[in-house]
Structure formats: structure tokens, C-alpha cells
Amino acid sequence: MPPQRGPRPKGRRPQRRDPQPIPVAAPAVAVAEPTGAVVTIPKSIAVGELARAMDVSVVDVIRSLVNLGTMASINEIIDFETATLVANELGVEVRPEEEAPVLTEEEAPATETVGAKEILWTDVDPAKLKERPPVVTVLGHVDHGKTSLLDAIRSTNVTSREAGGITQHIGAYQIEHNGRKVTFLDTPGHEAFTAMRARGAQVTDVAVLVVAADDGVQPQTIEAISHAKAAGVPIVVALNKIDRPDSNTDQVKAQLAEHGVTIEEYGGDTPLVPVSAKTKQGIEDLVETVLLVADVAELKADPDRPAIGRVIEAHLDKGRGPVATVLVQTGTLERGDLVVAGTTFGKVRAMVDDKLKNVGRAEPSRPVEILGLPEVPEAGDVLRVVPDEKAARALVAQNARERAAGMAAERPATLDEMFAQVKEGRAKELKIVLKADVQGSLEAIKSALAKIPQDEVTLAVIHDAVGDITESDLTLAAASGAVVVGFNTKMEAPARRVADSTKVDVRQYKVIYELLEDVQKALTGMLEPEMVESTLGHAEVLQLFTAGKTTIAGCRVADGVIRRGAQARVLRGGQTVYDGKVGTLRRMKDDVREVTVGLECGIVLENFNDEQVGDVVECYVVQPKPR
Ligand code: GDP
Image (cartoon, rainbow, N blue to C red; front, side, top):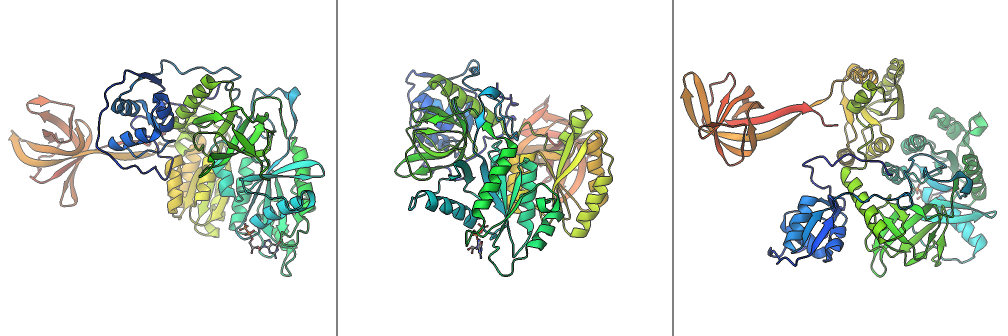
């Protein structure tokens, strides 16, 4: 069975996953006459799937969601309550599924072992495993020649094997070298690499690190090294642009060593191949070397089982409909197979490879474009062949539930969680992405961190660099279950968005001692949970009454709720004149626990009798930050 995920946090709105929701003109609301149809749906369901289940058009569903005040795209997951409202509007009765359909081993064959290199699915029978081609990602600093190198590798291969062959960019391509195949992912750079990994999609077997011989190790080279290492993927260095007169190979080799990549020539285990994407010098050597590294990794898969793969790219093609590039990871994908990809399913109507050739089968590590899915899946979605429609629907429902529950739900990605795990004796390693304003403080922090006793839990700084906290830092942390620690740093806006969506813990410090103390506490299970304040509501003071020495503030709740016993402050002209607690709360003559927006009430604050008409009572709670 796939791993169980926790329930979706209450009250959280379904996450918008499509950045451009389909615009729909909002017509007048019309509640349809019930048609008598009763449809059973899961507790959370994708918009497209709901439309299909009710046998209505997706546009109708989206339109009624708009009427309900929710802009939702086709892949968005909505909860049962929302689905019911939509269904009622469309005249369909929905019932919750009694129990999640349980999939047999064959239908949902495997738990993915994220990060494992050879065995991707636990039910793989070792006796049936056969060698498969390596999947390679090209990483490196901007302008060092990643794209040129990918083009050079492809064109070298095309010209030698099928002169004049037309190739298209489908997100990945496969070449042949001395009768052996190698797959290259066509989206270079560690952002894409780690974004996929953050979704549990570790498809890369070998990372080619491109370093320009005339420019040496640069910030993104260092990032790429950290990303590849965090993923446990072996590196092959492609020392590019050796045709340039100003190339300085020795200097680059020394710089690489400084950043933890020791090449074979220096006694390490990382091969380095001098190349020129321009003159094509060394390209064959590079491919040869990648194959040698792949041999060491013993990459295997079972070609004789229903296929499981990953969507690496997908888009809506005007003429052809949803098109997905899929990398088969195990099994063989065949035309006509019924497949589930994320929250959509359909029959594979056609498959083409990167040379625009129609193919009937795709073996492990082979990238193909498939047609036949009714909706566009997401990059990183698992694609899985299923025996029949029942299994397909069950798997789609399960994927929808998992998506709604949040993919990162199980990752120990906050210091608080580490603390909890350390206390329970479960945690072994605390991973940190460390950023600091200047090299001096970065070094000081690193050496101080190294001195913290690591008896129970070890500390691993998986990436450290000078500079603000970037999107790349966040995706690396999200994919690796790491905490981001910044010293005198700011966080870039795109990084903040990733932090919000992935819930990665970002801790920023201005005092080194506090940074060290927090890390130490997390390592020893002593960390206090971070407290956060959340506002419950506001009430405006309209009138004052007195009862003996007590002042009762007659208020109207302007927003949210006012709760007895909760914390409260009195705001007057922008100043806080009181900070304490709601002592008594009355509605009419009755003592009540809570008064909601729009209602009038009498508030007595603890130890405070100086309210004035026009004051605002702000009610709030302070709680440990949710984990
Ligand atoms: P990317 O940003 O890493 O994908 O780099 P590109 O592939 O776009 O290359 C950046 C620039 O370097 C382009 O102007 C290329 O023509 C040039 N370039 C790439 N490889 C070589 C090479 O081997 N030799 C020389 N002289 N220039 C190269």
C-alpha cells in the first residue's frame, strides 16, 4: 500500500495549483432541478474528476465554483462540502464514498523509495531486473554551456546515426553510443532537477556538471554541486569551452576540490572530461564516462511488467490535446495501455519519441510523448499502467486525496519537528541549508556548528553560500527535508512563495549565538516550539456600562469572533492601551463563550476598566506554530 498521509488540515482552502485558472464569465446563479442522479465521490476530488463523475462539462463545474466565489482550475482539488454545493447547483446528488477503495498490489504495485537509485519500487523481483540506460541531467552555472552541450550531444549522435534526422524537444532525448543508450533530460539546471525531486520524482541517475574552463566555479556551480549531492546522484564534470584561449583547467580543478568535488586526477572519485560544445571535442568521451559511472551504479528495471514512469513535461497542444512526456522507469509502456497520471487517466492513443517517430512500446528509461490523456497532468506526476477503469478511478481518487493532504506532509522540515523527533528518539540527522551575508560570518557559523556535540543526531549542512535566501535554497530544502537558516540575510520574493507553499522552515538570525543555540536545542531535543499569534477578531466599543467597579464595554464584532478567555488588547488611535484577557462575555443577558461578526455583546476585560467609546478590542490567541 502507498504511504498513508495525514488528513488535510481543517479550514485550509484547497490550494490553487494552476497559476492561470480558466477564466469563465460568471452567469447568474441558477439552481438546477434535481435530476435524480446520485453520484458517489471521494472526500476530496479534482474539479475535472468531479465533472466526469457527474457527467457534466468541466466548464459547468468551474462556472458554479465561480458562483460560489472560488476560482478553480480543472486540476484543483476541492473538498466534499464544496463538491456538494456544486453538485446541488447542477442538480446532482452526491454522497461521500463509504470507504476508500482498496487497491490490490497489482493495481497500485509499489511504494516508491524516493532517492534510491537502483530499486524504485519495493515489489520489484530482483531476478527479473535487467540493465537500463542511465538518465542524465545537465547542471551548472548560467552561460557555461549546458544547452549547447545538450545540443552537441544530440547532434553528434544524430549526424552519426541518422543523418538529417529531425529531432524535436520533448523534454528528454535518448542517444546511442556503441550500442548502449543514454537518456538526457532536456531541461538543464538544478531548479528543474530539484523541483521534480521535491515532488518525490528522483529520475536522474547521473548529473553532468558543466563548468566553463574560462570562468571556473561560480555560485550556481556550487548550488548545483549541493543539489546533486543532496540527491545522492553521482557527478561527472564536463569542463566546457576548452577551445577558448583563456581557459584555465588547473584552476577549475582546484576550485572544484575546494567545493567538495575531488576529481579522479586528484585522488577523488569524480571523473572530469574536457569538452567543447562548440567544436564537439570530447563529447564522445563524456558519453563514454557517463556510461562508466552508470555501470558502477548498476541501474536496473524490470521491463516485463506494467509500466510505471514519471511525467517530465506536459502541455496542451492545440491540435493534439493534452500531451505528456513520460519517462518510463520500470516496465514497458505500450500503445493502448490504460494509464493513470496524477489525477487524470486515459488510454495511450499514440506515442512518439524525440525523433518524431511513432512507437508502439517504450522500455525503461525511454522518454516518449503520449497522447490520450483527457487532461494535462503535472510534471513529476507518477504515470502508472492499470488493468481497468475501476482501478484507474480508485488510483485517481487516491492521488487526489494525497495531493489534498499535501505532498510534504511527512517530511521533517522544521526545527520544531526535529525537536519532536529527537525527543522520541526517531531523528538521526538534521539537514541545514545555510546562508549568510558575508564569507567571514559564514565560515564562523560553520566552524561553530561543527563544534556542537552530535551524539544523538548529526548535523549536515547540505548547502552553504553567501547571499540572500533564494528559490533554489528553498527547493533544495523542500526536496531534502532540510531547514533553511539565514544569518543577516533577506529572503527573495520567489523564495518566500516556495517557503509558503512547501512549508519549509526558514529561520533568520541577526545574532550568531541565537542561531547556534537554536540548532543546538533542536539537536538535543530541547527546542521550545515557536509561538505564533493569530488574530481571532475585532470589536468596536459603542457604549459603556458600569456595574459596581467593573466597566462593561458594549461592542459590535466587526470581524472574526470574540472569545471568552482569549487574549485581548485595546487599540486606541493606533496605540495599544491594554493587553490582557477577555474576562466575561455577554450576549443579551447570557454569558456566552463566543460572539461572531455583526453581533453585539458586552465585554469585560480582566483588570481593565478604562475603555472608551471608539476603542477597538482585538481578540487573539498565541499558539505553538503548527507543525
Ligand atoms: P547555458 O546557459 O549553460 O545553457 O549556456 P549556453 O549553452 O546557452 O551557452 C552560453 C554561451 O556560451 C553561448 O554563447 C554559447 O555559444 C557559448 N558556448 C557554449 N559552449 C561553448 C564552447 O564549448 N566553446 C565556446 N567557445 N563557447 C561555448
